[in-house]
Image 1 (cartoon, rainbow, N blue to C red):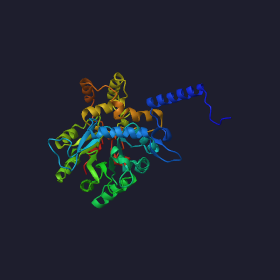
Image 2 (image 1 turned 45 degrees about the vertical axis):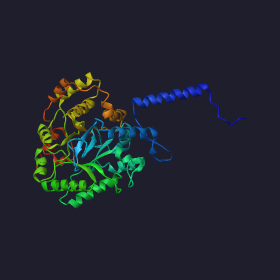
Image 3 (image 1 turned 90 degrees about the vertical axis):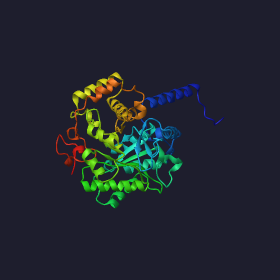
Image 4 (image 1 turned 180 degrees about the vertical axis):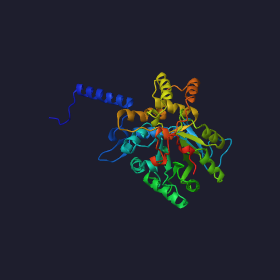
Amino acid sequence: MSNRPRFSIVGVLLFLLFHHALMALSLQYPILSRRDALLTGMSGTLMLSPQLEQRLTNFAKAFENKRPDSILLRTNEPTDPSNPYKGKLQMPTVGYSFYKTKDNVDECLRIALFNEVAMIDVATQYGTNDAIGQILRDLGITGGNVPTKGMRNLVFFHHKISNSDQSASIKEVKQNVRREMRKLGLDGKKSFLDLVSIHSPLTDKERRLTSYRALLELQEEGIIKAVGVCNYGVGTLNEIIEAGMPAPAINQLELSPFNQHKDVVAWALKHDMKLSCAAWSKLSSVNGPQKEWDILAGIAKQKSATKAQILVLWALQMGYNCVPRSGAGSKLEKLAILENSYKGVNRIEALTEEELDILNGLDVGLTAGHLGRRDGWDDDDVSGDDWDPTNFVK
């Protein structure tokens, strides 16, 4: 008798039907497991699956071809008026923030990469760099002097140094940056961070300026491509200029239709500084702008979009970068990582001029103190309902 396995036609058809259903489900709900989504391999051996590698390669080609979903940051390289890309660093307009993702960082990162999110927004304060670095080493994106297959350039790293990382010693600041680079697997001779920012201005003038100067020196050494700040208002931005240093390439702050920071926007236009929107998660809370939030929700309903997607669209059409975040504790949270990516919002019709005017009319100057936001500082730093880091000068 033959030992060859026998398959019935019905069994094969059932298998194909089941496989087709799984594929359809994975396309509709890209909720990815360690084994089935990003990785292949046995016994814990990790490698890039052909599917993920192709997705990342496609993104890389588009990114190299100056796709319109990126903004250009100033660097210390020479520029050329006839070539707007010379001396500039391309930064994806939509990234993913690892703020409050410590419990699900593994799955959050894998879902984000699978859905072609190529910018990751990390910080010392978030406490996720070790876990992120281990995953990226396993995937061959970081680790070693020359990451395998040139995959390093497929991920744009934005790292933010914490208040405790800031120092009156340039040497100490540099050591703190290199420590986090090692965690991320960026410890080889040719390793670099695309963008490093000061997470908040809530220290003092000496530490702020010394830390900024240290980042500029790391840029000169080729360790950092661009230098930025976060949550800076006009007062602390002016400190940098008055100290004879170049303006930041970008300022990340809580920027939304409900707090448009028009004074910071005007400063940015004058000094060729880009803006990045972060920390939207509190907007839908009881401390958020209730009436104005309902107006935004009405626009979302008309476009068959989520409210978060409307915020991302608003940021893109205003010319800002944005770093939405979502956890991975539930199916809806996982789906939100796709929905809020560039690919996710690109399926939605653009905001009309009328809709943009409506959203831009919702500015109520919503402060971080009122919202209860703690991205870059602690409870002890907040002095009241009207407190906001952009108003801090010490």
